Structures are given as C-alpha cells and as structure tokens.
Image 1: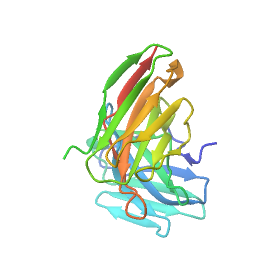
Image 2 (image 1 turned 120 degrees about the horizontal axis):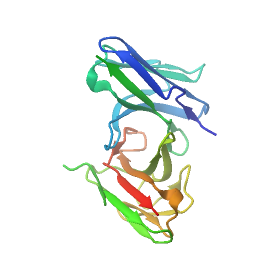
Image 3 (image 1 turned 45 degrees about the vertical axis):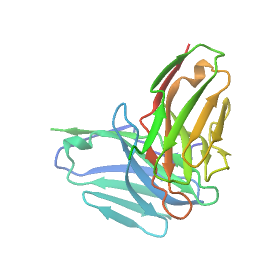
Image 4 (image 1 turned 90 degrees about the horizontal axis):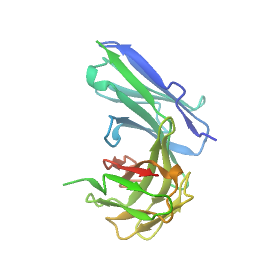
Length: 112
Length: 114
C-alpha cells in the first residue's frame, strides 16, 4: 500500500514556463514533507521541505505548497530551466518512528 | 568533507553469495538510512537507524541485515543474495530527531545478482 503517491511518471514543460509536480499521501501521521531531485547515476539531492504546520515554503525558484485537508502537496518551479530536467521525488516523515518514505518519482523534461 | 560515501560502487554476485555494503558519513549525523531503487518503484526504505545503537525495519527489510557500527558507519548485509535483490542501493544520513529531516545521499552501489 503506497503511502506517498506521485501519479505522474513524467512531465514535459517548455523552458521558461512553470513546472508543477504533484504528490499525494495517505497517512495523517506524516509531519514533514521533502522534495528531492535526482540526476542519472547520482544520489538524490535535497531540494526543499515543508512542515505540516505550514502551507507554503519558498526558496528561490522553488515553492512547495501543502494542502493538509486534501493530503496533497505540490512543487512549483518557475521559471523552468534546462538543468531542472531530472527525476523528482516527494518524501514524507512519519511523526512516530522517524521513517522517511518516498514516492515513485516524476521525470521532468524541460523542452528548449 | 566527503559527505556520505559508499563502497563498492559496483558489484556482481552469484545467487547465494553474501556481501556487505559499506556506508560512512562525516557530518556527525544521528540518523542513517538504506534505500533501494528499482525501475518504476522509486526509493524504498530497507532499514534505518535513528541513533547509534538502534536499528529499525523499513518497508522492504526481508533478506537484509544492518549494523550501526558507530555514529559514522552503517552497513547493509546480504546473507544469501537473490536475483530479486538486483538494484541500486543508496545510503543516506540526516541530523534526525527534531533537528532536521533533510537527508544527504551517497552516490549509490549498483548490485547485480545473477
């Protein structure tokens, strides 16, 4: 049973436009959410995070929105750049046991 | 400051062989994790250690054992490798607790079991 879901396996966006990556979760015991970026043959790198007590966190071109009632979060990248082409993973931390669970990832292609 | 290091980078095993994947971090982090990544499956948590001396099962622990040797090192052992364990294995660390959940990942170990 997948607790963190990224339902879009891939997404293509024109350079300069906004990229929106979505993530849904089922467990209300998650208290912290993170986004990671992964290039081929490398380990994931941390991008941005948000606590469950907030609904928005912004860092430069990256903004994460959290809708607790819908158990949904999204990552906005604006403007999208060629170097943003990568796989993006959504992850969530369980409040009780410190586990961090990942979604399956969304491959983002930035088109020239 | 090397961050998280993993050895080996590549390994080929025959079914039934055993091996240990090594992981070390130099950031004085409390928590360490082992994940496996398979095509279309994302990153699945195998085992984690919230602090030195403690280990807990993740989503897919069967066929694996771990040791938190000290605060720096967290090893993953396959006692009797199976083809289903062919995967890319990532180690990660974080400050943990209420400090920070941001994880730092190693470069991965690509394991093939024939």
